[in-house]
Length: 420
Image 1 (tube, one colour):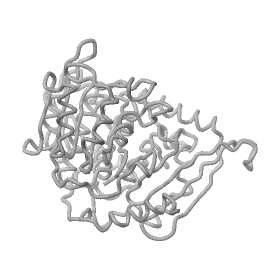
Image 2 (image 1 turned 30 degrees about the horizontal axis):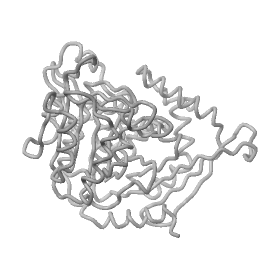
Image 3 (image 1 turned 30 degrees about the vertical axis):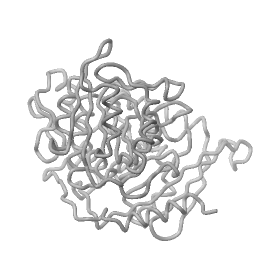
Image 4 (image 1 turned 180 degrees about the vertical axis):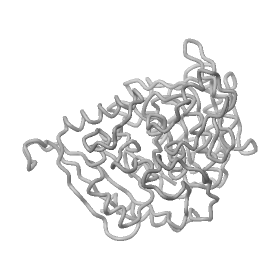
């Protein structure tokens, strides 16, 4: 029987032979924030000649009484499968309590918009980076890996990898990456539909829930009008969602609304359409309806859509993968609606240039880290100098007036499934 990691390796090699490496236009800001870039000398941009993916598998095992130190009670087995050369493996011992405490501390710092103190080796961000990547980093550098598909065991999928730092760079700055709960759920083939048409649905007005006033702008500004169909508020109904998303003419589904992930599986969790809630159990019907032509990308522009419970740790995004989508984007925490709308508008600008998904998200993160997303009057300006959002209210302006470099704004938006 072929091990799943070796099968993934073969499939990645096949993907590398595709048209993924076609020439791509690169956005770059001529005036980067030199302090924010730290040791980074190059401007953000995607160079297809340097594209080099690999798979990392993190496996967590309770091992009380079997570790070499009494302070440890678990193993973290790490396997790296590069696109060329042999796989490499490492075993790290850890204390499950210390790990949980560090993860809790990191989430607390992020939720409060506090500095992560990455200059301190004892900070949660640095300690978690060391746990997952200290053994790997020299190998990744030696092999010049640019893109990672992280297959993470249950209990590790909620780690905000993008916010982990080695003291010089955040992981999400250094690498393009995607998360998968299982390599078996990941489609390594090219997307089956050559069309890049976007189905954009959103709701800005609700009964009993806070309004999302930037959703109309978000739907207007993601992708180009000639490649997009929009359904806003009353036009966005549970039936229109399912009917339109079942159409194989759409390769991308973008949903901007409120979401509720509740314990108990897909039946209990729901997205809020413009006319009422939509059970996420219904999302599973898309697998059969899109059989042979799966959605290439599903984006949930809503809060905590990438974080679920013990039975569905990756939330709505994990459900989208189970429904047959090749890739899904969701959020790990309660995100700021101004920044999230701006993030996705910028991300789609990269996607429209042909930049692969993981790299589009990395470039967007880098733009945030380097303060290349700037507030100018009532506008939030993107990397290319074109507004991402306009007519921001004084309250919305205040929320981004101090910049958007803090990982709270960008590290919680994660790609799941295929990174290309």
